Image (cartoon, rainbow, N blue to C red; front, side, top):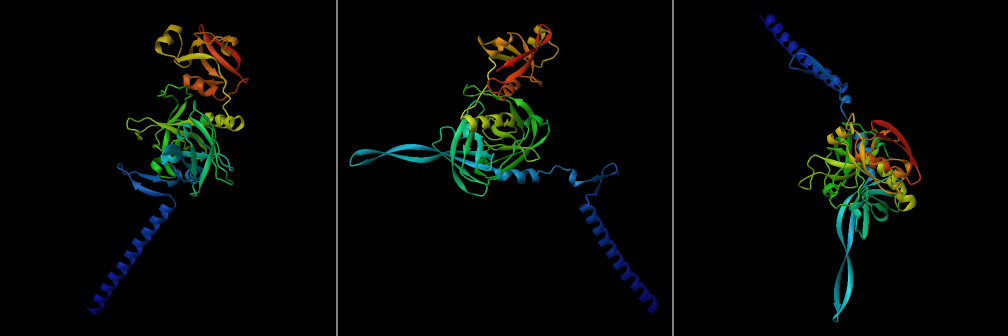
Length: 368
């Protein structure tokens, strides 16, 4: 009887030990599968799906590469007030912070791009780097038409962002917005490219060149002048505006593409102003009514509404009513594409313009 009890107890102990070992072995196997990216999850149809973590988007490389090159821009205006000394007024000046924004370092020796509206009317500009150094900044030049400004700080060996090709951006592609919203330094948000070639109405009525990249990355006051980067950590745009009834992010943000930014920055640094070529036309998008009247096959292109007297367009032979369909091989879908293309060129450069007139395609070489 004692021998039977002994073997029963032994069986229970061994079973418990082996069961515990099996459980630990199963957990170890599960951990190994997770480390190998082969974690299996049951699905409702009883099939099993293999999930590989490396297939999920990861923004760490782009974020870590880019964040150190984005700076905080502080703008000060000089207020005048009077003190009286024995009844005589003495004029005094006092710098008052008038606004903040963001900027992007483009060179190791301290050239920085930001928005014109960030530094407009500033008497003094300061830049705070990622390493928390605050440096005075000199305004090199501005271009209100594209809302771009260039600053310079006296420093060396600075981290910088290389220009990427905003033309190669695809709808749905991931992008990161980096800036200082609400004075929250080095804030990174992610979104996708929602649209390209967007234009917005200018509230002040001034001439604007607008062909924005639209994203759904969260951008708020203070992000202006900050970086829009692709997943390779390349600068593809300068965050400029939001569409919002409240003044805060409500789903849409807009950036100036680097195809415009790079040329503007180069002109400002080299010449002090933008060398802007002009075609000399007034234009409008193709509507259903216009397409029907001109018997167009599609709605792409822009209609030449007016040719300015003496302009290079007129001298080349372009006429009112012509429909521009491409510029230097780039398909023209709307007026913002024409603006963006023209902003890339300087006076005396030559471009090829393709138009449709009386149902026939014609080619013109125009010296701007």
